[in-house]
Length: 130
Image 1 (spheres, helix red, strand yellow):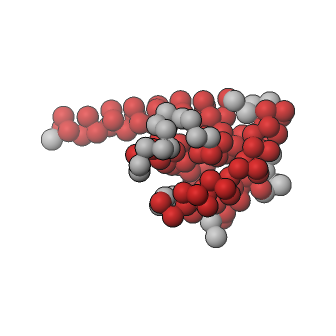
Image 2: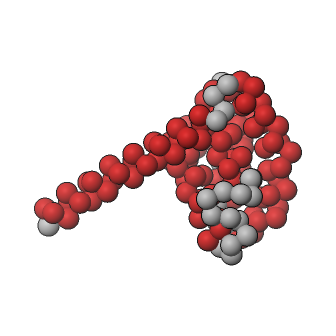
């Protein structure tokens, strides 16, 4: 039983480290204000088309909408929103770790990214759910 507990603790640490790395990667592309604005424009032009196209197939559409609402909040500084921009651009962009054309499993990586950002933001995001 003690070995199981130790292995579970190690797994949680590894998961946390992986999530921290993923979060850092997402926000690093949008650390400058210019890059953030490029991502912002891309999201505003493409997000709803992607959600309409695949929204009925996905169980995490409400999470995407909450992230978008957070992204729109003018009281949050742009550098804080950079991680959300990274996640939403990753979701929209058709070429990623697992191509979205693969039925169902093509969205597993998108789900992982969205989940990691939601977990990272925690209760800060709660008020942005409809």
